[in-house]
Length: 332
Image 1 (cartoon, rainbow, N blue to C red):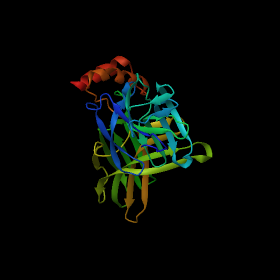
Image 2: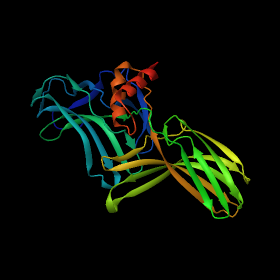
Image 3: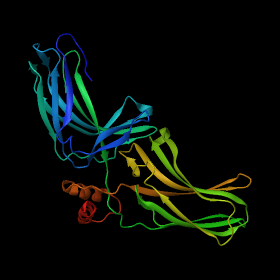
Image 4: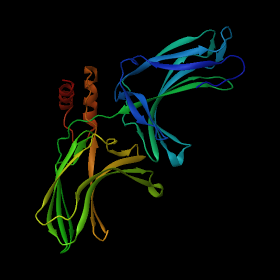
């Protein structure tokens, strides 16, 4: 992006030092499309160059300083004027003066804290970006470059199974069990459903994965439910004593880790929703929250310390040493 004024103007380009080797991932934009962005983790250094190219060679460009910022911010769509910044770092590249020719400036933000996962939702967006600015009296010239951040976790130590009952007195009694309550994003949900008493005519049964996005606080709380997956368990009437196995692969669905009270602005939670429909089209529900987390599948040795940082943040994780061992194991 460049802004034109009388006399000299310039174009800004931001180039990362490891642009050729750094992994890119797809991330959903606000309009629902997907673009590829450079992927970073918490604690990684962000470094590169800012190239300033003068548009009119021979003319000088006066400025009030050149800087680059690394920003992490949350934007609530119902409050678009306010950007809530949780990371804000600035590096001055040049003091006030003038440019007589195109120039390149180096920058480095060392071991940057990136505590939250990048997220674009129904009512909220969490983004990280670099912004280079040439300050001028009349109008600034600036360029932004978005990056994507993934948060990593280690295997949770406490991961108990889920057991629940669905019952309508003297009509229906069902027990269902899932193998655990915390799943990584490429995990498999394994479970069983037991029919202990069936006196109503069930014609259809399914498990849905529901994403619930909550934004705001107090009277300004907004909930958005989105059905991520539907898994048909049976089509037809079950009989007493019957058990039905469940195997639901998560890798094929577009999901994020569970996010709880991110910067006191929003949450993203996931639920398994058991739905029964009888022959009179009555629907019966039973819902259970599950925790989703992103497994540390990084290969680069330099990233081992990142797993340590992640392990200290993940609820139920034990020690940093276990995280380090897990990162090494995943890289083999």
